[in-house]
Image (cartoon, rainbow, N blue to C red; front, top):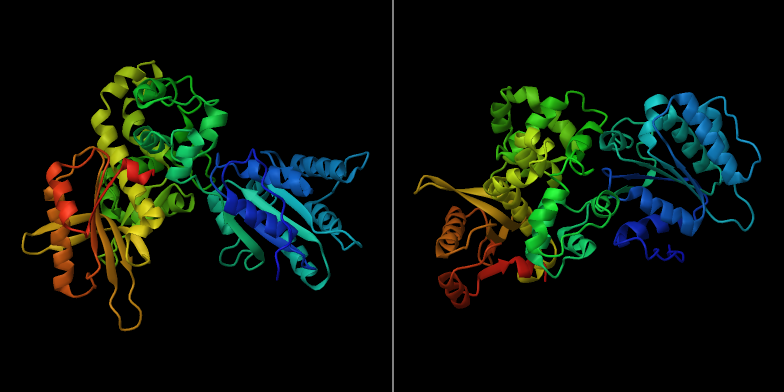
Length: 496
């Protein structure tokens, strides 16, 4: 089916090209029946900003729910709907059943009229007091699969566990959605452009290690207070993230408290602190917080559903995995801020930050740099490989002769098909604050040799990559110039 002419994205919406195209195409699709879309994403990602821009461009009805009782929410919905339809008086619905029926009636076919866009934002607030809403919407969606309808309904929310459950398993709306969009943080390159620091990679990398790609942190939280150079970063950090006067100071705590399924926040902070300290396996996390592994299954699942924690498989060892905090600000809070909270509250930001350099490098910037390097290989770094990587991750190669484990920070693997073996396209090591030398390369060569000896993977086209935020020794540069399979990738390359 040819795509209809789509409205151009407004100039005030930064990035989000793919998201805009998907939403605009959904809203304009000329099908004669009702369509449902679900838009989710953690707070501060700009979902409301994006959807309001779509409603302004396309026309339609927007309703932003608030924390309120069922009766008040129903009155607010009736008032917003009356304003949209031009009614002189607010609609007084007795039940949500009446309200949803009336809403869908507005999208009945009319000659010469196109699709009707309806956005219900912060839908989890409504579901909390009116749990029947998904079933009511399911009934109308099913009804208007038989009868004609112009309805294009978008349900949006920030409570990831709630939004994820709307289309899961036996949920009423399972199988009813034609669009499921998760609005994620900006990637590290897009974030550098957004903050206006793309021409200074060292500053961009530090900013992203602390605040990630959350757009609201620059404009709404900091009113465009951006460090002008790397030399200004320390002072900027002390007056923003580390200052009790800044809205970012308690943001990491709020991110956790906002999730509906999180009750015992102390337990969840302990789990996140364990991961931030480098305890990334289930057993290590349990040992750090003094619990049995089985006792932390639920917190781990909730943090995953909330998109605050990511479980990543070991690409070389089946059944092994490790956890990584997906929100950089939480990592920074757990590693730097939480241990010195009382001093920070008393205004000692400069002293705390001065004494946190080692922790920041090892627990925040280092692991974050490894994740950025994997993102690079998934994106622009693909051009450096001979084949398209099916999986980019990390893993451990066991060296039986030396009785040690070689940690591979960046690995690109193409899974085998049929009787074919998987192929390893790249093995990489990433160091944030270390000038890398020949010994790092030799470790990668040994890992490739072990994989070749095992015969479980094809390593004929495997390249070796050293990623460094601090540079490379002359000896390593000489070795890379001699061996065409060796790649040296610095901050300038990551942000080129």
